[in-house]
Image (cartoon, rainbow, N blue to C red; front, side, top):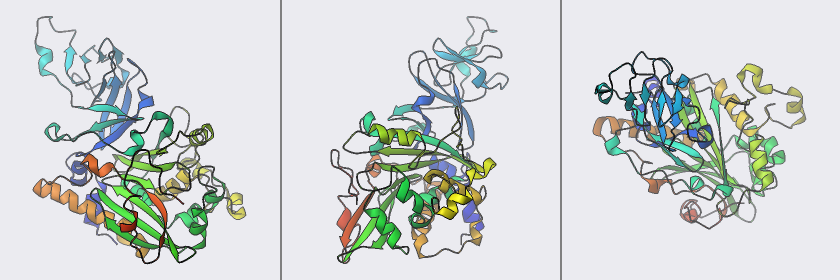
Length: 428
């Protein structure tokens, strides 16, 4: 169980909260690049860490992320005109550049310096890979840009999607580092999903339903090892890296692409789930990419024009009890992403962790909570930079390996969990 005051600390991410300040030490995903596809395209609303913002791309291709509301009368700049190097409010014509600096106030004399004293809150917005990243902390402490492998492989080797999840970010993240549920919740997908089926490791997931967990410290977070019994005196280890605060990599299966997530708070009761697949050494096949676009693997099928899943709580996630009885979907919900989301959302917007009864298989979750709490308090009380800010901490991989029973999973897998460009993932 978790004390209520600790749960409050870990789940609240608005301005001025300890966890909100922690998130603001990192570069975090703000948009998919496809949301601002060309110069002077329509602006896009964004709510992130409980702040309401507007993203836009100006006439010169520069990206901006600024306060949603005009400094004049507070009208939303989403209604604005993106033109001639800035975003002009539709109400009275005030115009702002990508830094939030006011450029024009039509009602003021041409020789007035009124504009120079008007500036909206703004944050940097940079494109790396398929994602537009922002940093919302102290500009003097802005870290170097992220170096996660999936955003630095060639474009043909990666695919990223996103979806809105109606739960607090932490219960979503905790699902990402919980490997024990795979043998139950995702058992049907291991046999049928085109981005999972056929891997030798699937049989170990299904033959050993009582994995043993071992958690090791990492510079940027944790390595969570889930051990299952294999043949010939070996163990099958699935190694999940977690990089603070909200990056996880799912252990690979065979030659299938590697996938993972970022869990980004919208506010305290909703989060964005950025989901990616990539392969370190080859292009994604057309069939793989199409399957991702169709919502297979860890991706979702979204309502056209939105990032809300077609299967959502308003339609009971299109629960199919007949498919559940037939064993096609263990929970009756189709698709790995929505199987996870449906149960994580079922906990409520913010789960009451004081009612939990955790077991040994939850050791990764317990350690992650401890590490987040310690880092948030060290930042608040002593100004200590948290783990995961340094780009060197990003250069990790997940792995699925067979090891002799006497070997330490992490010591024997150091190469497997380290990014080595041009070298395939270690996978069974």
